[in-house]
Image 1 (cartoon, rainbow, N blue to C red):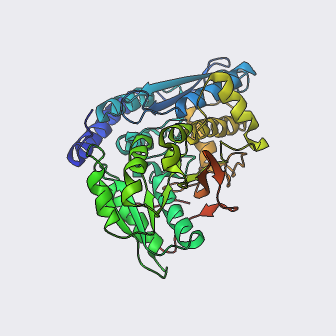
Image 2 (spheres, rainbow, N blue to C red):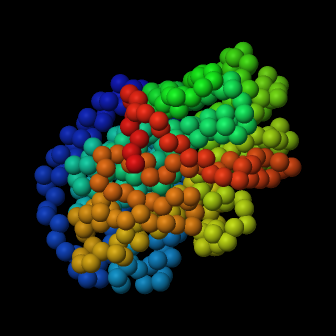
Image 3 (cartoon, rainbow, N blue to C red):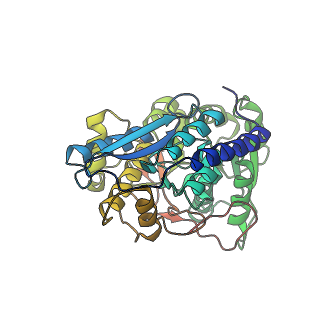
Amino acid sequence: MSLPTMHSFRRLAVSALVLAQGLLSSVPLLAAPPPNEPIRVGSVSTLTGPGSTVAWRAAKAYFDAVNAAGGVGGRRIDYQVLDDRADPQAAQQAAARLVADPGVVALAGGSSVLECAFNHAVYEKAGLMSIPGAGVDPACFGSPAIAPVNAGPYVSTANALSFARDVLKHDRLCVVAPALPGMVDAFRDIVARWAIGRAGTPPTIDLYRIEAPLDGIVQQVAARRCQAVIYSGPEGLAIDWVLKARAALGGVDHVFLASVYTSGVLRAVGVSGEGIYVLAEFEPWSGSSLQLADWRGLMLARGIEASSLSQGGYLAAQVLVKVMRGIRGPITRASVTEALRTMQPIANSLADEPFVFGPASQHQPHRSALPLRLTNGRWRIAHARWVRFEPKAEAPGIPFGR
């Protein structure tokens, strides 16, 4: 499946909003549901096609466990997951279905490379809040209706730069990022924002098309004589990068984002990956911390792969359940939205910082990462402290909420 162009992104996003306006005009006022009616929670996720993830499966596993324990106030959770197939039109149609159903009180646990870009305005108009298990595109972090539980690729790129400069003590830093529609400016902006007020050589940024062979970009980056490469991209391409970059970039430290922190990468790169770094956005799933016990037990029981994505889906579902259990009175779309906007921060065992939705015009509640290194075939913690990006000044482009 080919990726949409920037022109088609804009055209389809406008049509999605028009469609939603028509649907919303026919949605009845939200009344209190019958006492035993299920609580409907939705998700627009990539189940099939490029970028499919397990985040929604982890969220479903958590909701199923809640249902088995009696639900929320005696009401079970009906989790409705719609597949966007990594296709813009499918994403907008899925969102329109969920928005038009007044019984859908919130969205949680989803993960999609494009869903936020097309649907954020629809959710804002409908007053339907979304807690993605993994936010990817910039709109996930720039909407009053969306608050992902993960740090995402942009803040994580800044965290990787901080780790390479402040901990590994490298000066010449090179960022390699995918040239995906809507994401190019966000990567450029975060690199520029990270460099504000910092001494040393500003990082370079090279963009690659995900459908093109990596050989050309590998040689392009090698010519820059980098001391460290920060690579942002999906797991499959990252594996290809590791295997192809070893010869051209021998001796250069590589820092990858959370999408590469998987058991699949361990199996695929073998000794070629020895020494690479990854950033864990949550408590490292490969560790033995007791903080992982509940999440790990549930993932094992359901046969879901341990990964940052399954942690994010689980955490998004957990946050929503905690918020709904704190609501006094009927659990409706309006009451859940109000509860999220007025909530106090919720601490959790998987993240370095508490989650809060709040009333801001955009949300970036999670900003931390813990570096790990591939050593003797295992992921091992490479730094004793979490790295946390704090922008020194605002810059044009994508806003990052608090």
